[in-house]
Image (cartoon, rainbow, N blue to C red; front, side, top):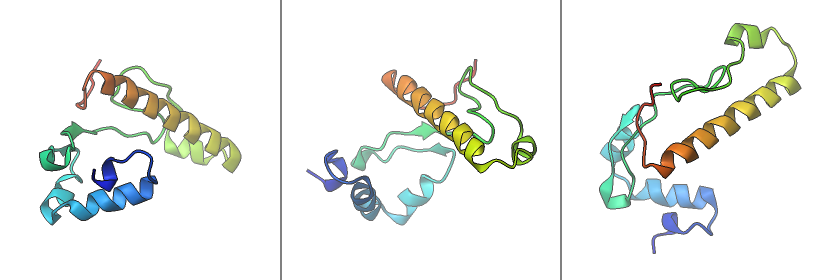
Length: 109
């Protein structure tokens, strides 16, 4: 088994192994919002056209926080960290839910 497929291994080790197996063209292709599959490595095509500057966008209903300038005006690093944690948790939950249906494309509701 390839190291990058071994879920018992460290994530950084796995990522380094996977990227080390990719060609320059494959690496560059994964920088696009509409990244194509790399079938030989088991990487599915996906469309990650999304942002989470003030909440998860383009993935259905989501919590929305003030725009960046409003968040910056809070001047409370701990509170901003809590907001970032909420956004990242929601993003991961949405990813996991859509992944169940093999849905890796733009979600428009």
